[in-house]
Structure formats: C-alpha cells, structure tokens
Length: 428
Image 1 (cartoon, one colour):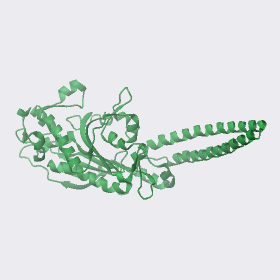
Image 2 (cartoon, rainbow, N blue to C red; image 1 turned 45 degrees about the horizontal axis):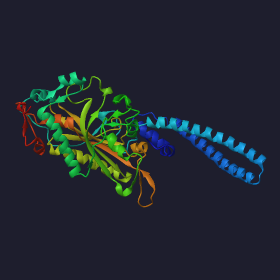
Image 3 (cartoon, one colour; image 1 turned 180 degrees about the horizontal axis):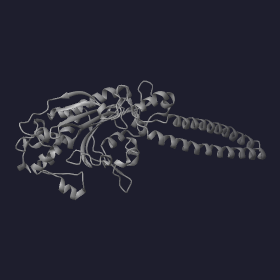
Image 4 (cartoon, one colour; image 1 turned 90 degrees about the horizontal axis):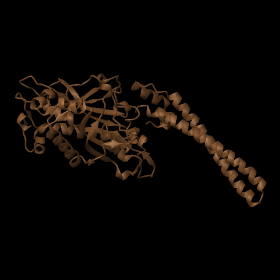
C-alpha cells in the first residue's frame, strides 16, 4: 500500500508512475478524501481540547460548590462528547474509503524499470549456458514422464480434477531431492534461515502481501475463513508483521519449501498440458526484510542466489528485466529467470525475484528502529523463487533427456538421489 503522505506531496509523480503501469489513478478523489479527513481530525482535536478545558472548569465549579454552574458546564461537556463521537465516526468512514482505494492501487515502478504493455516490453539481461543439442527430436516433459511411467495425469484427474499430477518412483524422489538441494544451498551458503510455515493463513496475512483483495478469485479459501497459501511468500513475509525490529537485526532472510495452491482463474485454456500451470505445485521461496537503503543490492543478491541453483543443475536459462506492464501488483522492480524447454522450443519462467519497497510493509505495519536517532521507519520487503520445484523438474527432464527415454541427473543432485546417475523406466 502506498503512503498517502507521499501521494499528497508528490501528486504528479504518483500519477505519472501509475500511468506507466497502465493504471488510471484517481488521485484527485483520494486526495479530496484525505483533505476532508484532515479537516475532520483538526475539528475533533479542537473539540477534545475544549472538552478538556470545560472538564477542568466543572471540577473548579464543584470545588466552589456552585452546582448550577457545574451542571451547565457538564451539559456543554456532554454536547462536545457527542460532537467528538460524530467526528470519530466520520474519520472511520474517510479512513475506510481511503484504504479501500489504496488497496486497489499497485506499487509504483522504480525509475529504471522499462516501460511496456506486456511481456514483449521485457528486456533481456543475460544468458547462461548453451541450449542443449540433440541428435534426435526432443519431446516435452509430459511425454518423457509418461514414457517413464512416473508422471500420471489421468489418475490425478480422477483424484482431484484437471491441473493436478501424481509423480511416482524416481520422479517423486527427484522433486524431494530438488527441494533438499535448494534448501541446503540457501541455508548453508547464502545465509537464509529455513522455516516450516503454516500452509493455511488468515485473511490479514493475505492482505499483508497484497494477494487480497485484488486476486481473491485466484485463491483457495476454506469454510473456516483460512486461505491456502499461493506461495510461501505470504507466511514468510508476514513473519515481520506488526513488529518493530532493531536495525541491528536486519537483514532478515527466510527460505521455505512448501506446496502452493492457485486457482489459475485467469488461465482458462492456457497451458492445459503437462505440469506448466497446476493448481498445486511446490516451490522453494526466498524472502528478505531489509533497510530501505539495502533493497537495491538485496534484489541483485537474491537473483544471484536463484541463478546459482540453475547453474549447479547445469540448466540453460536467461534473465529478463520485466517492464511496467508485466510486473506483479506489489512489485516495484522484478527480474525473471526463464529456463529453456527444448520440448516446447521456448523459455519459461522458473523464478521471479522482486523488490516491493515498503508496499507490503505498510500493509503489515512492519518497521525498524534506526540506530543513530532511534526513529521508527518502514522496512523494505523482497521475495523470489529459489526456485519452482515443478518447473525445475520438468526443465531437467527436457534438457537432460536421452534418445532412449531416460534422463541424466546432474552431478550436483546425485548425492540427493542415492548416487543415481540416470532415471530410467526400471527405477519406478
């Protein structure tokens, strides 16, 4: 959520920033509500001051045993109390209406984010590795997995419906191995603290990271009012909710491997084949809570952590800087890592690393106390995939496939696979 004070003092910059995102910000209506609220607060404060004065006069009149004057003054105090309550109700109305508007407004892009309407406006940053070369026609992960007898979509449909999969044997073990491999790298080498968070969260937590109210239709909720997490970003970032950290505690870095649940409401008819877009998938998430001055370098650091995973998995990929029209709602700047899928002959997102500035932190009331003057400021939050397990698995299947239908296992993963060097149908 954006800071209304910043909007008030930077109206033109606010409107220009959101226009870059294709968002028609009604700054005038928002600022008019803000103006009325501040007038209302000032009037209420005046009535409170007057009530305090009259209450003192009531006490003085009672000391003089002037009951008539005390009664008269008490009536004035009651009248002022009613006026104050009226202004407090009006303040709640203004505050709720302003919050409703602010919750619908996306984050402002940083100045170095390229303008663009959609993914065609993204800017390639760099490529790592070479596209694999085959002496046969490569197939996609669905054909590979089903050929191995370890990727079962028909049974998953009987169990749960479309956009689910059952993994068996070595492929089930491969997903588990990928999670352990990534968590070990992030905790042992990059200083992230491993967390096992709840997979069900309260509505306030979803609001805190901006999944609500904007994306309610894409989430799974329960009858008890809890929500299934669409990503571990939600519980990990909310670890900082309603907390004031000492500056010396920052940065905080968390990682978790969790299932993620999404309705994919806006993806009807898209990517219906295979594991590309599922209602349930697993992901290793990275979250950082930092001082504002540190967030630019933290984003680069987080991107490097995610890239290192793919380098060790010997996967070819590219990094792109997202344009204003392709960024997530809460992001101020985002890098995507896209892995090459030879079976599809295209790049697919496998990680998205974003800086959210103070956008989420304001919603969560996550703050820190500065060392040098003890002033309390809002933290910055960042999140990234470190990386998506399902897409890492299918990328390995496609880039490491062999002509006989088997799949080579990268050397870095072999200790997690019991020394296995290749996945074959007999490993079911």
